[in-house]
Amino acid sequence: MSLINALNWRYAVKRFNQDILNQAQLNELIESVRLAPSAYGIQPYQLIVVSTDTVKQACLPYSYGQDKVANCSHLLVLAHKTELNQHDIAAFIEQLAVSQGKSINDLAAYQKQIEADLLTRTPEQQANWAQQQCYLALGTLLTSAAASYIDACPMTGFDVNGINQVLGLSEKGLSAAILCPVGIRAEDDHAASRFKFRLSQEQLVVNL
Ligand SMILES: Cc1cc2nc3c(=O)[nH]c(=O)nc-3n(C[C@H](O)[C@H](O)[C@H](O)COP(=O)(O)O)c2cc1C
Image 1 (cartoon, rainbow, N blue to C red):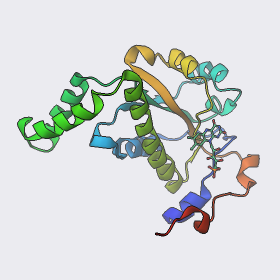
Image 2 (image 1 turned 60 degrees about the vertical axis):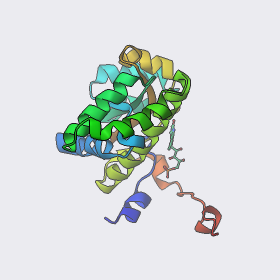
Image 3 (image 1 turned 135 degrees about the horizontal axis):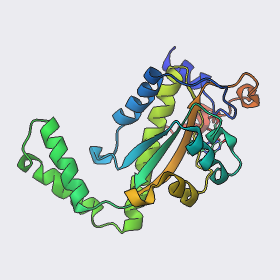
């Protein structure tokens, strides 16, 4: 399937069938999030993969009645870091240096640049910045899922504090940014037949 066909095929699924994605399908989704770009490459988030019914059910009271968080194959959660400190940046630079066969000294200027940007932000600004990075991972995940005929529904309609509590995210320095139930669309999902509304190219594009 071409990428454009995949983007036309996908929609935000409201009802999943009972199918459970196999490990290869799940790995593909995970790998797409792993490979998503992020500012500086620092990936200030984690991907929580919820496969147990108990945990999915526990998320239900915090999803504003959207039962797809429980009735799906897996519930993926993109959770951003709530703060970024010098240690986070140093740890990232260390791994980057190893992976690129460089010394930490080679990356000293890059490290300073990241520090000057991120460490001068308030914790709230850092959290917002980290949360924004999750959206790029989400876009990559949705596109990759569609290309493999896997369905998904991105969700920001949920009670963040409740989900953080259920998943034990706050104590890990994380906060839920986006929920994304994944699986296979149900045959009777009414949303499947909805017209896909998008701005026309004329409305979207500004030619200068
Ligand atoms: C960041 C984001 C948050 C969303 N939150 C929800 C949500 O909480 N519940 C829901 O049913 N759909 C949610 N959606 C799905 C959008 O409503 C949907 O993508 C949009 O209407 C376009 O329709 P389509 O994706 O089916 O083409 C969300 C989408 C995005 C990108």
